[in-house]
Image (cartoon, rainbow, N blue to C red; front, top):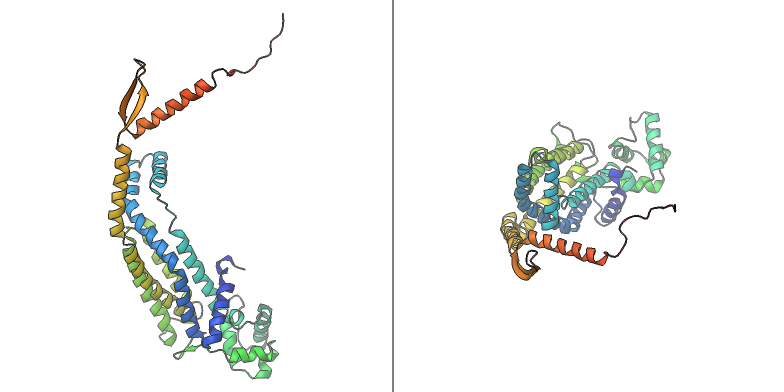
Length: 350
């Protein structure tokens, strides 16, 4: 199994379950998409919180990169210190993004193979039927093509029972295929869209429009200024799925459109929950408090090396660390002073 379509079997079970209730492929896709959107909401909240935090850390990161532009080692050390001291994590928002991608690719697998995943026909039967169709000259199908199963279903719908079963399908499978409702407001979701203006083009166009709206609102909700190639990454990823929309049945364009609308609403909600501007003010105050605490001097009791007297001094954080280290070394020296510190050597008697 292709790792990119790892979730396809699981998503297919959910889709098949929904279809069993509603009896229409289009409504099944919409209900499925809304359900996935609700399940994905906690991750969307986590991602928005992470992006809002990153909008606070971004100026600090830029300052470090500028200050140590010619010293990569020092730059990395300071970035690591930023992670340790303030809990900054550059990968915190990656999980939701990758999960969304795998869900979307999983849907690609389901929509590309409705005969296998939704109707429940075995892959060996499908492969045999495709060979028979090619041998009889009814069509030229490639089993590896994203549209082969949808085309095969369309062919079986126009056949009588004898012809359909001669391809290797059972009567029950033929009835399931011919009874499978893939029409949605007059659009055959088994069809593959092209640039020619027709009903199939509606959903790809809607997917492009909703994609643009989603990218704009997501960038604004993040509160960040993307730099370099990262600025174009959301658009490149989205355009990749738009390209996919023109290579597989139009059912995917419907899913992508509804999914974009769901994510659009989720983004508006999560932005209210974790507004970057409000979090900037809050976390900036926290950062300033931490910096002030580190600079704040503390009273410690030490032994003056010159006079041997015990005195109280005001020291900063760095001096406190040095004194603690010095004390630890002195205690170790006292503890192990009677132990041998040089290796044994062999001696010969004269």
